[in-house]
Length: 189
Image 1: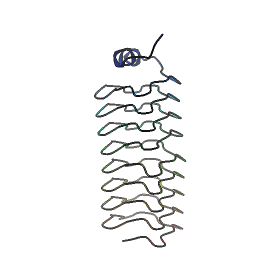
Image 2 (image 1 turned 180 degrees about the vertical axis):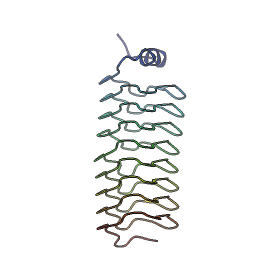
Image 3 (image 1 turned 90 degrees about the vertical axis):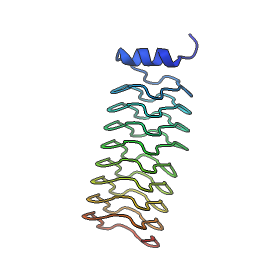
Image 4 (image 1 turned 60 degrees about the vertical axis):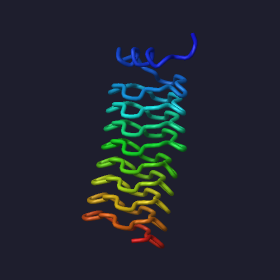
């Protein structure tokens, strides 16, 4: 059987079928309802998910390199261990997602909603988080070295032992944030 088309993927996921481990390179699933879809370990490099609903989806270990998620809803999704090189997550709803120990180095998260997200131990060095909302997010031991956090909202976030060296924190809100043991050398406020 050849490559799966958009229609085939949407139909299979609509029936609750798993896409675990499948090669869905460059598939366009923009504007689709993929709520609770199982895409664990799927190859979604170059895929388009603009304004798609992936609430509660399982993308654990998926290859999301060069994927485009602008405006998508990933609320409560499991993204642990996913690959995010050159991924665009701008203006994406990532509320309460699981990204523990995930590499998000230099990923575009402009205006993303990351409230209550689990980013413990995640690598966000050089990530672009301008205007992002991280209210109540777990950023314990996260690496945010050189991250761009201008006008981000980190109220009540747990940044215990986080690395914020050389991070741009200008106009960042941090009311009630826990900063115990956080490294802030060279950060710009």
